Amino acid sequence: MSCSYADGLSPYDNKGVLGLEEKYESSETLRLKCGLLADWIQGARHVVVHTGAGISTAAGIPDFRGPNGVWTLEQKGLKPEKGVSFDDAIPTKTHMSLKRLIECQKIKFIVSQNIDGLHLRSGVSRQYLAELHGNMFVEQCDKCGRQFIRHFATTSVGKKCLDTVCRSEQIGGRPCRGRMHDTILDWEHNLPDNDLALSDLHSSVADLSICLGTTLQIIPSGNLPLYTKKYGGRLVICNLQPTKHDKKADLVINGNVEEIITNVMKKLGLEIPEYSTDFDPTRNSDLSSADLDWTIPSSRIKEMKVLYKKVCKPTKRNRKTFMYERERECEKPAKARKKSLPIKKEEMIKVKEESPMDSSDIKQEVVDNEGDII
Ligand SMILES: [Zn+2]
Image (tube, rainbow, N blue to C red; front, side, top):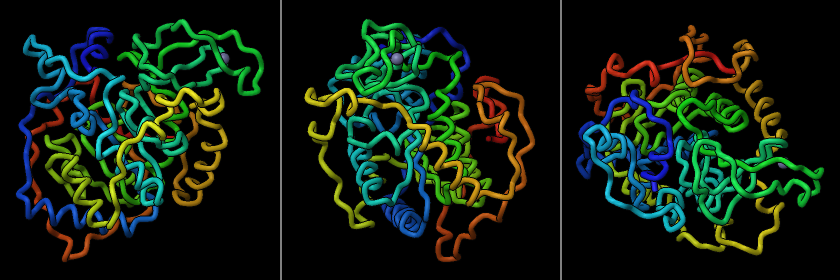
C-alpha cells in the first residue's frame, strides 16, 4: 500500500499543503456540473485526463494530502491504518470508466501520478497512458531501457535493482545482460522521458484537460494541465480538497471522484465495465514477453509531435527545454496561440470559490513552473 511506498522514499520535508478541508457540492450542483462536464467531453476533439491518488482511495489505497493522507498523518507523527496491498487492490469505477472512455475515443490520453498500477490493470493499453512517477507492476532494464509488466508488485521503490533478467531477447531484440530495476521515482529522480514527452504533447494538443483526485502540487505533473489552457483549451478540476490551480479552472467540481464519474458516465449514456482479470495483464500468466512489453514506442512520440505541430503551431519552441527537471527556474510563458474557448452564458454555473491555498505557502520543491516545453 501507499505506506510501504512512502516508507521506501528518502526523507523529504517539503511535501506541500497538507490536510485541507474536503468540500462537497450539493447534490443538485453536482448533477448540473457533471452534466456540463459530460457536454464538454462530448463536444471536445482531444480530451486528456490527469489522475492522482484521489482516484484510488476507493480501492483502499490511502492518498497523500487528504485529511487522512499519508503525508498529512506523517506530519502528526501518525501512520495510516494498514490498507489493502498493491497486489490485492483492484481498479475502481473511475479506472474502469476511463478505460471505457478511451475505448470509445472520448478520451485520448491519461496522465497519471499514481504508482499503484491500477490504470494498467484496468486494461488500458500503453499508448494511452503515461505513468509519471512509475508503476509498482513494471520493471525497467538499465541497459536497453525496455519496460516489462510484472505479475506481482515490486518490493522496492527508488529505482533499485531487482532479481529479474531483461526479456529483450524474448521479444526479438538483441541479447541483453542489463539488470532490471523498479520504476518508482524517489524525490530526487527526474521523470521518465517518454512518459513526460507524451504527457506534454497531449496536454498541449488537448482542448479539454480533466484533473481527477489530485491537488496538483507536485511539479511538473501538476502543471501539465495548464498547457491545455495555454493553447486555448478548457481546464476542469474534480477533487474533494481545493487544489493549486482552482482559480485557473473553467469548472471546479468538489466531490467524491467515484460519484462524479458515475454521474458523467450516466449523462454520456455509457456503462461502467466491471473489473475483470481477463483484461489485467498482471493476472494473466499465459501472456508472452511481447504481450508484457510496456515500453513506449518512439513512433508514438513522433506521431504526437506531428499532431502537436499541426495543432499548436506557430508558437516556436526550444527543444532544449524538452526535458523537465523537478525544480527549475521559472520562465516566461509563451504567447497563447488563440483565446480560451468562451463559456456559453447558460454554462455559467460555475461557482467561483476562493481557494484557501496560497501559492506562497507552497515551498520551493512544489513551486509553480510554467516554463516552455519542447
Ligand atoms: Zn535490456
